[in-house]
Length: 72
Length: 154
Image (cartoon, chains in turn orange, brown):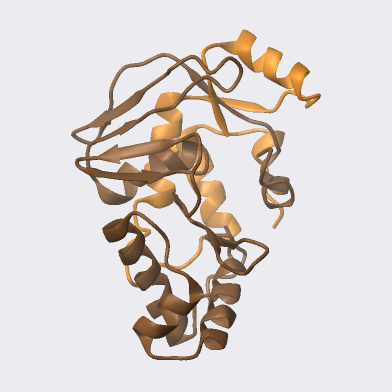
């Protein structure tokens, strides 16, 4: 998951590494995702998220569609 | 991420997990399996088994030599995503993990990121729990359901 200056730079990177275009999100979405995903990581009682919890996080960040679907 | 909320069930796993985070946060480097074993007064084999179980959730990932590669969001090896928090410095594996470090610590931070295409400097700052205004977008190359099949390009 890399940071890019613009959509054009994403396209150049995909061409350079022969990768199909993936999913993009804004930095603000990335920050919200990081907060929801990692905010409780130092809690001694932390447990890994299950798929439904992860789906809920994606929805809260606005990451919807085929690219963000998880295996159940 | 995991489909099993019960993965971290061995009491030793809980101890190991917390020790690893505390060690990295304090010393800015990850402990070896032998160092964890010594600190927790148990055999290196038990620690390697514990690290292996903790890796089932992908929150921890191991190198081929069995030592830690990642204790998410912290990278155990240097990367292109250095994160400075006060006088401390750690690495994230990717921009998501780099943002995850101040999210986890609830601290201000500066991420010395750069454009994945041209290496143009793109520092990212978090202050007071907010992301400072800045340009850029995050690209995730691999669909979510395949993230852990291709970690390098994800």
